[in-house]
Amino acid sequence: MTEYETLTFEQTGAIARITLNRPDAANGMNGTMTRELAAAAKQCDTAATKVVVLTGSGRFFCAGGDLKDFASAPDRGAQIKGVADDLHRAISTFARMNAVVITAVNGTAAGAGFSLAVTGDLVLAAESASFTMAYTRVGLSPDGSASYYLPRLIGITKTKELMLTNRTLTAQEASQWGLVTEVVPDAELADRASKLADQMAATSAGSNGGVKQLLLTTFGNGLEEQMELEGRLIAARAVSNDGREGVDAFLAKRKAEFA
Image 1 (cartoon, rainbow, N blue to C red):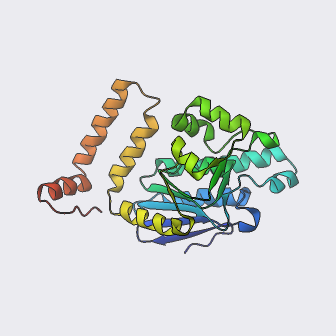
Image 2: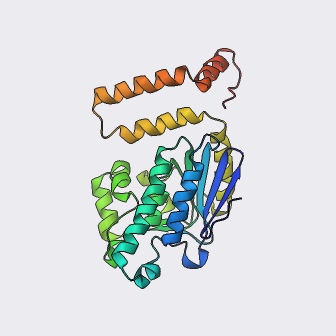
Image 3: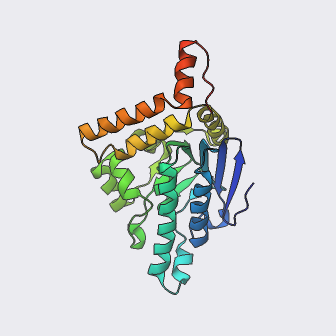
């Protein structure tokens, strides 16, 4: 287990588990946490890691930025910019790594916590979890990739509703809106996340990375550009070790054993 001050990091085989660990501060993000989250993301971005499980300790997933920390800084703007930059570095790394990122939202996800929660490739939510933007309530504006992901996930109209009214969504509402993959009973969240992580660890990291790459570019590319990317990626997968193993296993009617 790697030692961090504001989060825990544990690697078991191909699965890394990151837990936001400031429960007395509702897992609020200060400069230390976002620096450490960026470092942990970088630590996961290797061939040794095929799955990342990200969750929170205590009653909250993450209540967003630590406003007490911001208020005590000599230069609030510089402090918040530094925290946002490190958070954005972590999110960018998670988005572009081959590993499947599973966010297990164990409680309230507010502000940047909401933003972070929905960046997961697969998003699990406890029944008691809730989601709220909360930025404009304190005179701030969204960060943590919210203005990128939310319009793509739920459209501009619903994104404006969340950002301007600070509406709180229950876990079931978030699922109905398309923000959450699966809602599970609170007591079963950790076990469900572990089972899903094991399932993903048996798949091909290169194929998963290809899926992530294609979906990151889909709204920015035209049809022909996106299809060309698809063609090049599937050709590269076909001659990879995992691609050869997958096809051979299918033809032999056996389970594939991916690296």
